Structure formats: structure tokens, C-alpha cells
Length: 298
Length: 259
Image (cartoon, rainbow over the protein chains, first blue to last red):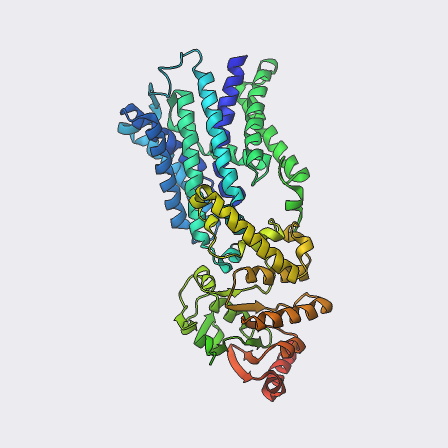
């Protein structure tokens, strides 16, 4: 039972970090990133490959974050001068490019065979029995740090400029803010955070292959952000834990139902969809969102 | 001699086959209030968009305090002290009135991500100074009681006031006001006139697009009339209003509307 709880905390915690990166981009700056998972993949593969070549793990994680951050900034510079929906199109394309690259660059990534047996942090210090518990503590620690960083930024004048871009970019420009530069920064930072979650995911799974990073993962992050309330970091974390709690909780039911496993997982997604529709109708601001903030204007 | 703060020379702008601005030239003297009037579609707002860098002209030059600004991005022009407001008020809906105001301040240390994290004392000092200034300006515009309300919850007239108040946070040298009186009730409008006059006394140069002629006459030192993208007349407000061509330009519009 403890193992089970630890596994929920691990998965939900890692996805919470992942979704926090997206919340920075969408919730604060209004950027439509539909390829968030590609940055998670970049983080996971960079960390794993460098780790296998003997690079110290903290450096390997940092390298993944830098690569993802630079890729995010590059995508932003290429598309952000265009209309805002171009970013959505380009990022979803980018995420599939990265996945197919990982699938086909066999000499480096072993393709669909995947990578395993790579070093994980603290393996020599902690026994295999307790490893997941140790990793769960690490994930919670990282989550707390990322949350604190994002809250500090969101409340700073920097965060104020982001919010103004989300609300009306012309106003921030008319007030002397270089909105393009802020959006690029925001994409880079959010992507680096996704890469960090990818490194942690690789440590947890012990085995990664390109199909861990399907576009669906991006939309899990969107569900978490929307469920908790866009622009609300605590809401995003809550959304992550609720979603994974739901996924895991319904797994118990499988034994009692006469559906086939694939039908059950499809039914799970149907229920998630219904919950989201219900949420949009009755609580469009999300679980922790501010009602007043959304009810006005428009 | 005060001299010109803004010099617009021979600016052209076409949208498709239509010339929105046709060799349009305007000079704004330091410390004056200059009005811009004309029938709908005369090119007034287009001219504001071009001066503030939101739209690029096809030809012509614009000098602000002696420096060429055509081709500069909008935020750079704003940082030079040329700040505009919008015809349709653009309150930042999901930010409070105070946040709207504080955004307007220039040169904030905390607007750089890393500085906002590591120079916290300095940022906090700046924030309290900016907050104090924002509250003073809000008081001037009778918006102080609303400071914690969301921008989106204000009335149309209040949004107009916030728009102007927010622009003042940037300490502009030249303020472009696009129909500041539209949607503002008459009592509030009288106050707004007083406030604009006070700003002028403090040395601010202002350019105003406005349809309501009485307000224009009450405020402006100099008046330009645009019609079909051209400067039809300019001079002192009373003289310009009495000009037969100006009368006809407006009347022509009425004829067009009927036909």
C-alpha cells in the first residue's frame, strides 16, 4: 500500500512540475504551447545519455534544461512574431519531430528499443527497496523549489508584465514593454522546467523510450492546468494530483468490471472529458481559480 | 523658444487601394495641446498608430525630440516618452486597477526576471515608490476607491480614466489621447478637462483626437483637421472651426451617410 502511495506521489509530483512549466506559459503569458512534451523528452534523453557517458547527474540534468530552454527560445523567436496560434501549430509539430528523431536516431537513442540501465541519483546511498521513497522525497523537494520560484516570479514586476501580455499585448507595448522578449523568456523557462520533470521521470521509470512522450502527455498537462485554474500554481499542482489520483483509483475498479482493459482506459478518458465539460460549464475558472477574475469583461 | 517636440512629415499609408493618410504633415510644439479632428475614416487613429509605432507608414518621416522614430518598435518609442492611449479603452481585465497602474512605470529593476529574484530589497523599494505614485495619480482621477477591483469590472468611463492614468505612470513627454471623452459622462468630462489643463501646466505636451468640438475648443492651443487622409486645415481652434471647408467636410460625411 505504501508502495502504491509512493508511486502516485512520484507520478503526480513529476507531472505537477511538468504542468507548472505549462502554467507559466499559458496561465501567466497566454502562450499556446501544444508541444510541451517535447521538452520533457529532451530533458529525459539528455540526462540519460550524458549520465551513461559518465557525466555527473546534476550536470546532466542541467544540460537537459539548457537544451530544452534553448529550443523553447528558438521556437519562440521563429514564431512569436506571427499570429498567436502559429505557436500552437509549430510546437505540436516540434513535439512530433523530436519523438520521431528519438525513434529513428538508433545509434544514439536505440530507437523504440529504448534506454535502460542508466545511472540514477543516490543509487549507491539508498537501497533498492527504499529507492522509490527516496526519489519521491526528491521529487517533492524539486516540486517545492519550482513552485517557490514560480510564485516569486509571478508576484514580481516581471510576472506583472507577463500578465499584461496575456490580457492585452498592445497595452504592454504601449507602456514600453518588449513583449516579444518576455514571451521568449517565458517559453525558455517553461521548457527548462519541463526538461527537469523529464529527467525525474527517467529516474523513476528506469527505462525510457520515445513512446513515453506522445502528444497525449502534453494534453494531460493542459488538463491539470485547466482543472486547477489557469494562472494558479497551487491549482496546477492540485490538478496533477487529482488527475493521477483518478487514474490510479480507477485502476482498482478494473477487477470488478467486465470491460476489457482497453475499454476501461477509454472509459477513463471519457469520464475525464465529461468532468472537464462539467467544469467549464459550472466552474470555468477551475478549482482554485478566481471567479471574479474570470466573470468580468470579455 | 519651445520648439517642436513632434514633427510628422509627408506620411503616407495605404490599406489595399485606399489611402488612409495622404502626405500628412503635422507639427506639435512643446508644451501645447494639439487637437486632431475630422470625420470618421479621416485617418486620425491611423496617424496615432503610426506615430506610436504600432503601424508602419509607407513613406514619410516622423521626428520625436529631433530623433527619427519611423521603424522603431512600439515599446522603444514608448520608452522615449511618447505614450499613447487607445480609442477603445484597453483595461487589463484580469489585473487589478493598481496592477494596471504599476505596470506603467518605466525602468523597473524587477521587470528583469533574475533581478526580481536576487535584488529583492531594491525591487521592494521601487515597488513601494511606484505604488505610492500610482495611488496619487488614481486619486487625481477619482479612481482610488477602485484600486483593488479588476480592470474588467470598471465602467466604460472609468476604463477611459484608467487608460489615461496608466499612461501618466510612464512619465510621458508627449501624450497621445485617442477620444478621451468618449463614454465619459459630462460631469466627469468637466473634471477631465481640468485635469488635462493641470497636466499641461506641468509641462506635458498632449495630442488629442476628439469628436466633441466644445471640449476641443476648451482645451486645444492648435487644431488640425484631417479629411480623407489629408490635412484640410490647421490653426487656432476658433479659426479652424469657422473655416467653410471644415464645415463642408463634416457635412459631406452627413450626405454620404444619407445616400
